[in-house]
Image (tube, rainbow, N blue to C red; front, side, top):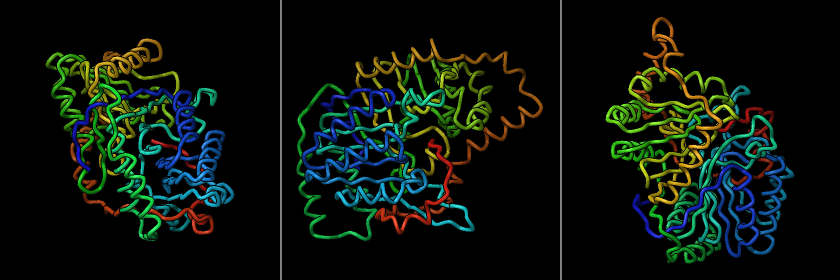
Length: 415
């Protein structure tokens, strides 16, 4: 995959499930040739069942449908749910379903955390929203705040090729002539796409091969280049030392640096870990806002008045050094302005700004914690490289093969 700016795209920001799900389901309903979908979480709730219905309807009218779910993130799908998809012709792939060892699942690291949809090779969706009801406001106080984008234009061809490359690399069980013939057909759909708008954009991924640190590297490049403002809203914030150093340097040279982090996290440890870095960031002039209305799940950022990113990657060790992630980086004033308006509204109406004086002096146990956190951030990218890296392994979601790995699982937290 080439990392390059691609001109001529129309990119629309979608906020939360209320905007995201209707657009995805409508595009699937209108699909004529192909739907490729990747997600970390697919639950068998009202959202998952709606997606289930849309995929079956598409497959029954002759659309080629490939769905990839993560073996750790989507563990509770019933045999009936999977079998009805398969019977309709939907090809369901599971990224590393794993096996239990003494009752424990050990496949927690290097997950497939991307959320991508490509329809007919001409429309793509990419962001942080999973297929679960907790991305809708009516879920209650635990409903998640999140973002995705809908993309039209030449960038879709790049995303489309990437999803098929992943399928080709991951499969070791499927090499039929019919599959290769269908791949050739759908590639032709996105071979040449006309310009659809004014946005330049690029697909940036993190994998365990050639693109080990690409997402973090693009963040650092943009932070170094920023002259006026940086706004980062990220659910799980514990970046590497170099990224944190760039944020502090930007604030010290007069850039307005603002972080929107979790104030009501779905996992309390998330807030505790992020707070270990507060003294160092606030001391450099970074402003920190904790989003307190509900759990923050977004992974978005903007720099100055053109650069922005939306994707699946958190700024923490799992996303930056272990998981398979995908972000879109956008260079467009109009999109930047729209995203800035959304984030400004959060800061003004749903956030508490952290006052350095309220944190108290950094001494005793807080000092020890901050020291350990700082040095862990400095070294964890190197430590992560020592862990085993495996080639993505996709297996068919046949119910009789997956049930032992999926049974009795209760952890439903996406990061």
